[in-house]
Image (cartoon, rainbow, N blue to C red; front, side, top):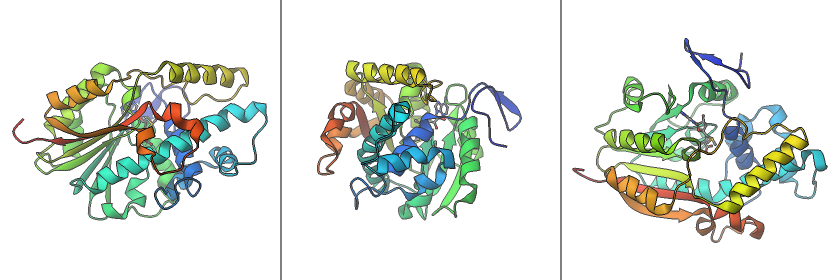
Length: 308
Ligand SMILES: C[S@@+](CC[C@H](N)C(=O)[O-])C[C@H]1O[C@@H](n2cnc3c(N)ncnc32)[C@H](O)[C@@H]1O
């Protein structure tokens, strides 16, 4: 049985008070809607559609079919997926490029959600991909992935609550080798963790990263217009009695670029790049209305230095 959408979920013999992530579904819907619609030739995620449950696909089809705008009841859900679709394009392209050029014998995807890289990236054919996620979200993904074919390389499931558990024992038990350089993907997770948990996680990632390892972190910058828009959409969802994917997953930490840079540097990582999604969307011909929200999402890439 899949985990329930609310209430405690039993996983591997212990209880968690969290349900499977709904924001993971929203960004997966975004990637499915963007697939073949935006930046063809640069962006593709055919696995996203396969990871969605049938009831989650209708709104994706509406967004893909640009002319078919839904009635007022479904309009907000449609807008959420439409905005997610545009945001996922530069974010995915930038992270994929960083993964391709990093040391990728071991790739750790932190807070993996419905990330399809293990299936869709041929470059990972020789990699061991460790998918780390909250137990409730991971068990939901494993159910969804049952019908998918094999991954390109080896995939290892690691269930861990980053707010309560240390990464090291969970990853070591799964076969992760901290003496071998690795690439870490931390996409769409930082906003959902408290600042102290983000700091603690970076310290743990650093301890587990051999020199030359790469950390790719996507974070959200502080923005009043974005916060107001999120709040407005949530009120509109409530008034129209639509499910709110953000209800159980509030944003808990927003960062400034220099805060992320200092955090990485203090933990032995040298910043290679940090760009917002608007900069990263140059040449991708995304709709102009997306400017504002794209400016607040960032992708930073850092390399673990020697002897730090
Ligand atoms: C918006 S989703 C992003 C998923 C995926 N990285 C992507 O970009 O498609 C947020 C993810 O963070 C995970 N997450 C949030 N809090 C977590 C925690 N305390 N421990 C582990 N994972 C967590 C959720 O389970 C979910 O998979």
